[in-house]
Length: 387
Ligand code: EPS
Image 1 (cartoon, protein in one colour):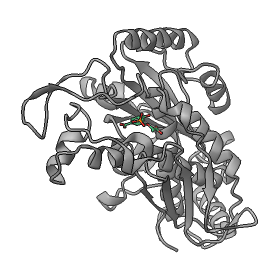
Image 2: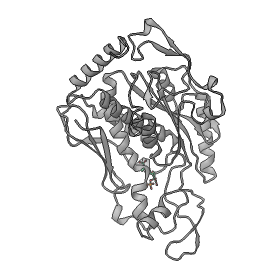
Image 3: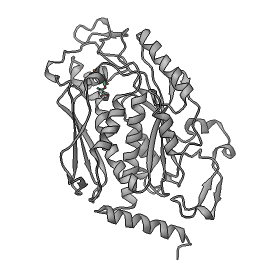
Image 4: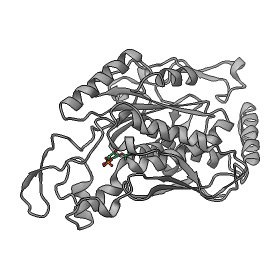
């Protein structure tokens, strides 16, 4: 049994995007159609550009699965790029401010930013979404659901859908192209993206992922490397264009006294049978994590995405071959990829939660994982001082 890991490979205009997932137990039913549904959602959302008219992202499962079930061996996933022209793609000598172009060209000693941008491209997130969607097969065995949605685009903010459970939240989100559960805000978001396109500009925003039905104790306070908050921040913060990650109240907690931040603890014997073991909170400012561990409340992770750095109007930059001022190059691009980022964050968070879940309830087969989970809940219900 190895720790759940995901490696990705592939250039934006190369033959494919690859994800290699290791550490899943054997016996897990895998549905390629469910992974495809996430890939299709990631391609969509209002504000996408011409590239998404070309691609038809679908997963091919190349290893680790037999007759629809995981074998316990590495699972290799492939998503074909239709826009496959890496060797013929033109050189790009004037870096786009905000993209990886300049920093990467200086790192890899090249004046052709193409050598860098191909891998830096958010095309890579197709691989991470496929990997996360694969791990949802594990999470759903235990009723755990990750739901991502948009809460801000540019200066348009949605009303937070505090009381919604996963099904109505997902339904409200899926009702519009902004992937935002607040329909009035969604309309204004779409109008803002339309205006940004007219202005030859781009827009960022904030996305949120909530994970429901988590048992307590995923992650750890014992080793900093195992703290789930830190692991989520690293995973989410490494998604292309993400510049900030918050858990629960996040940065807002810094401005409030403790009595208004922390979530008082209650107990309801009638809810002893739930994964939260009967412990209740009237609010969830902690975002489901205390001390780097899940506490039985829904996990709440938010990520801030900067506006796409490829601007139709260009920005002041420097040509790396002549070292003279020049407007930055324009590559065909999206105006706003915040809705797509909500799908990426949902699936990246699902992956990290699945990794922490398998660390606590480890097993070579899903039967052993199920037994470990049931045994833990039984034991935790009989909580007593250690002898
Ligand atoms: C991206 C630039 C655009 C986006 C791309 C990310 O691609 P292209 O240069 O081919 O027009 O469409 O996103 C994807 C391909 C995707 O699948 O999300 C970039 O520079 O990061």
